[in-house]
Each structure stands twice: as C-alpha cells, then as structure tokens.
Length: 127
Image 1 (cartoon, rainbow, N blue to C red):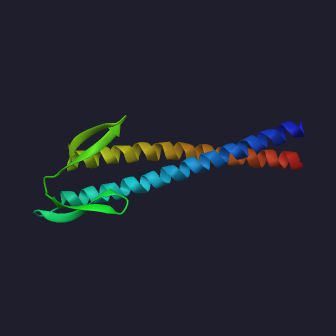
Image 2: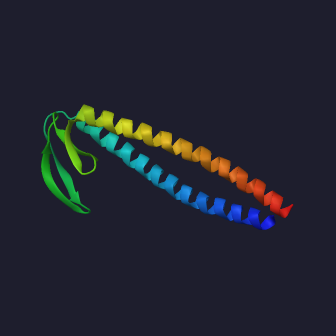
Image 3: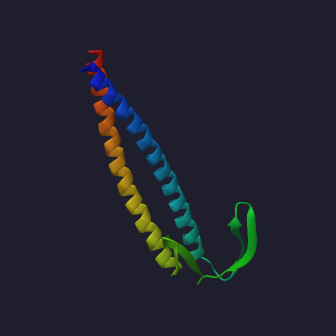
C-alpha cells in the first residue's frame, strides 16, 4: 500500500515540475504581451513621423520611419500573417493576454490542488 502511495506521490511531483515549467513559460509570455501592448500604445500616441531602429534579428536593426497611422503585421497562427491597424493590434493582444491569464489561473488552481494532494500523501506515508 505504501509503495502505491510512494509511486503516486512521485508521479504527482513529476507532474508538478512540468506544470511549474509551463506556468513559468506562460508568465514569460504574459510579460512579452505586456511589453508588446506598451510598444503598440506608444505607436498609437505618435505625433508626426519619427525615425526608429527596427529589429530584424537579435542585435540587428534597420533604421526606419514610424507614422501615426502605421499598421503592423501580426502572425495569427499557422504561418498566417495579417496586417492590422494599431487599435486592432492592441485589441488582439489584449484578447491573447486575457486567454493566457485564464489558462494560467486554471493551471495555478490545479497546481495548488496537487500540492495539497502530495502533502496529504506524504503524511499518510510517514504516518
């Protein structure tokens, strides 16, 4: 009986590690979405044309001009890229953030429940 509980506890602990990694990645994605939202908001508030360095790759930039009515190209999944105005882009990023936050909250709840289960099993094993 204790062997079964030990195996269950080990299984829960392994799953908790995976879940924690996924939650960490979600947090990183949320931070990135926040950063994108802020950048889009600053584009929306441009007064006239402004020069900027636009990233091409890590550490590689091209000098370009930003205009208040600029549009952005967004990857919407499966290799599909669409052109959006700044307001549409901000709305889409907001929707993505909301969806990711909902998933994170469910994962966090599951994490807490599994921690309680693991603690209970640990007490039974030590029991």
